[in-house]
Length: 221
Image (cartoon, rainbow, N blue to C red):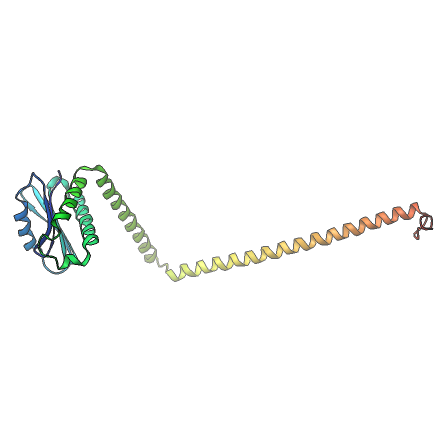
């Protein structure tokens, strides 16, 4: 099991902990580590003890600590700490800032056990962590590309101006297209009227020939 022990604390007050069967003396050492954590701002630190590494994440006054063997590296333990911190804050909210020692131990130790097993043994845990890392790399590349654009002298205002020019050109093109469609429609209407008039004239001429004159004397009596 990669992660052997975990706890959640406020300062040096342990609120919940769980130890695997292979590491029975982690609790006292973990409390010493809590005392060694630099005060002040949030931090992510690691301490070595023989072949075990104590990984620590402190955010908003809540410290999450885990003990993992050195073969586990740092990605999985710190992903575990991030997960546990989020779950703990979501479950207890502001109550964790005033709770006495081990107030959440009975309930939250089960969650520590479950997540320790998941991050230690389930291969999907590392796939998720790797995917998060790849997404961060893509984000960094995007930021780098923007920096390169700015270094070339291109300004965002210039890019916005080019976008506005494209929008104006598109608007003009649409107006011209509507005018062209209207012009073609009227031309077709005029052509149809002329054809109808021509057809009426032809019919009249044929009738006049058959009726022996333009006044149609043979047909109108």
